[in-house]
Each structure stands twice: as structure tokens, then as C-alpha cells.
Length: 330
Image 1 (cartoon, rainbow, N blue to C red):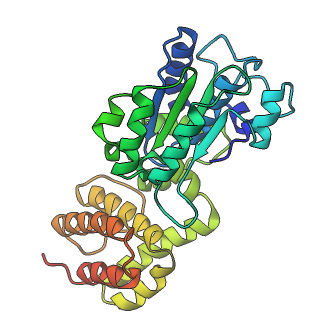
Image 2: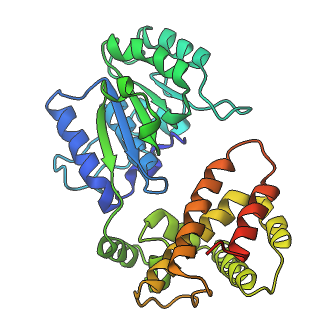
Image 3: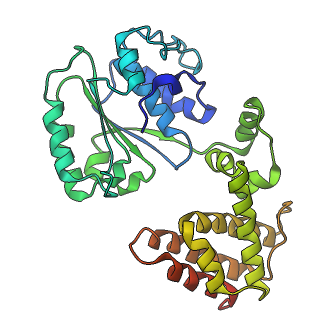
């Protein structure tokens, strides 16, 4: 994750404010834990929140607002009013350690946690807080998480571990139980609509429906190339359902970004299921599939999404699912 604090000067999205206010109150009352889990679905802006937390802890001269409800009032630190601000903007603050999977791996390994433990007991450079970020925290395997327990159980003074997680259920209960949890929840549809209007975006009802009002997904699909792929996926699924295309041909086209295509397919299946249930939505007409067939396809697509994280060749995983969609079992 980037450590450039220029992101922390932006107004936080409204669904980030509860966690931010909780954090500010914990700091002000000297009740901030040594271990923090910042959890929530992917695309909700957790890392922007974490950047602001880092700046709040490591830049003691930053003029943070006294009003916890004003997320946009932090004074701009990107021009280096303090040495800590300059370090953060350059990504070189000596009291900040960010742990992520190594370039050749999807995992945070036990030797990285051991190195973290060695770093944590060193004397800080500024005499204030020291911050360790593990992102994503669920990238730690069980051995790495167990190694992390020692520092959570006996934390050095002033050290705070920020565990950023899209899937906190994959953290060991012993890790979660030793941390304060800052949960970022998906906002209500009306909140997203207001946020889009305030940020100059266009409120497109069909896009809101497809994204289930998820702001990160809406932002991604608003980009022309992503919007084009989204509608291409719908066309492919409709063509397969009507026998106008072949499952292997579609699988070959999708294989360049298998996970992304499946994510788009899951969104269409969700909306088509709503339409089949009688919810009026202005989207692509529902393919000739029953509610049960749509439910089966959606469940299988979610399983496929998990399997795509394995080393297996994606084209054949895609083919199996697309062939079942083309000729449903029921």
C-alpha cells in the first residue's frame, strides 16, 4: 500500500467515518490497542482510512480536527510542514514498517513476521508511536499468524499493528481476539447515490443494481474499458444461453482475466435473479433460465472464483462452468 499522505487530506467517504471517529476517540482517550484489525469488503476504501490512521499516529504536529465528525478538516501535510510529514509523503518514515507478500508469492511468510518482531523491539527514531501495517493480513498463513501472536501478547511500548483485511474470517481467532476491530461496512444505496452526486459522478440506476450499491465496484465499472467488458460478459452469457456461441470459445476469451470476467458474471446473475423474482430493473433482459438455474449458476460461479486462485489453468475451469450454464441441469 502507498504511504503517501496526500491521500489522507481528501474527505473520507461517509461509510469510513464511523471507523475513523472510533479510532480518533480511542487515541484521544489513550485506549488505542496495540493490535488493530481494519476489516471490510474489498473496494470500500479501507486503505485510505489506514493512511489517515498512520498519519495521525506518526505526525504529531499534524493539525487534526478536534471534531471527530469532520473527516475533511485535516490540514494538508503533503507540502512537508513537519519532518514526519515529509517522511510519510516520501514513503520513508523510519517508524513505519509495511509488510506485504513478497513479489514472487501471495503469502506473508513466517520469516517476514520474525523480521517484524526484531524491528518492533528497536528504539524508535521520533520517540512517539511506531506503526506496523500488514496488508492483506489474511495473506499470513497459520504459522505466520502464530508467530505474530508473541508481539500481540507482549507488544513493545508505543508499537501499533494495523492488520488490513478483506477477509477477517481467515485470521486465527487467537489473532482477532487480541485486536480492536474497526469494521468498514458497505453503505446503503441512498448513501452511495448522495456520495456519487457530491463527487460529481453520474447516478446510473442499472450500475447501482449491478454493483449491489458497492461504491468501489461502481467506481471501477464507471471506467469505459471496464464498462465495455461488463456488457460483453452479459452478451456472452445471453449468447450461450440461446445457443449462439460455444462455451470453449467464451472461456478462451475470458481466460486473459478469468477472475474479473467471473466477478462480472456473478453481478449479472445476481441482478437477473432479482428480475426473475419480480424486481423491476432496467438492465439486460433475463436469459431463458429458471430461478433455480440462476441460483445454481451463481453458487457455482462463487466456487469457481475461489478455484481461480489455484495454479490450475483458468480456461478449463471457465469452460466447465460456462458449459454448465449453456446446458443447465434444471
